[in-house]
Length: 339
Image (cartoon, rainbow, N blue to C red; front, side):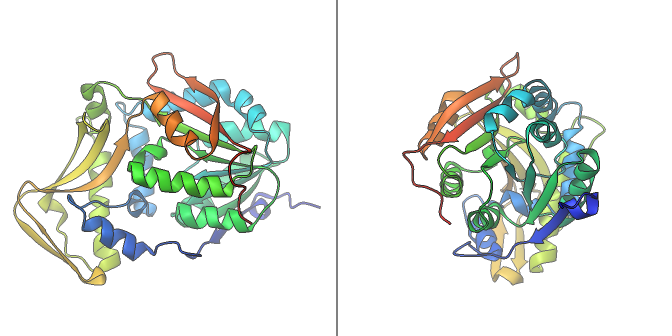
């Protein structure tokens, strides 16, 4: 008999780096030595960062979460039918509030196991418990670690047909090279006929985007979220960042169709990071990049994903073409997933 209580149906597995996954410290050190220095998105999502991001999603000017939720409310039954799978893995699951809409449609059709992958163990535990209390037939295996470790776990734990989801426009939080690497890992994880669901914010006017990614008057969620990256560097690596020495800001780069989250130095700063054996020299007005959000053309997105052995199956956009959900299917001509 399958376990029926919420506590028995939701568990969290901590993942260690496996089979060539680059260690966290190496990733952070390499990113900080780029020009300009940049930090990987996952670094900001400790318990504090996860809570601050939840506050961001509720800002009156942050349209992404509301539009994505409207799309999922309208189209989840159709998406669940097309996925035709018994396991759904989500990269960067967070609170999974929107994902609940899709899972609700899936459990109506078939036995479903949800495999959220996130670096925040407390968020995995709390969201898993909440989902299991609301969806009685859902089983949850939370995978605590970075995307690469989660996908590696999936490859070594085969089961019923699998779908991988990237919701919350998180696919755009990576450079082109990083997206290609991630798509390669996903392609290795999915077998022919299995699905990848990607949500994406679509390109639009600078004013709309910069309004969306900066705090409106009276709020500080974005500023606090960005400076939390410095707090993480101080805690993890013994760095001596002074948070007040940096000014948070988001700006749109039209050349790359990217919103960049920045921390500008108020004065010339020299920062030591002994845990990384690294010293950073940041001139006045120089910055750290702590956010990277690509705004896509739908055709560009499809081409990127299709280059890794996927075919576009369906897509859904809101009435103003601000945001889209894109469903891909792993091609039978690609290499099968490794086991």
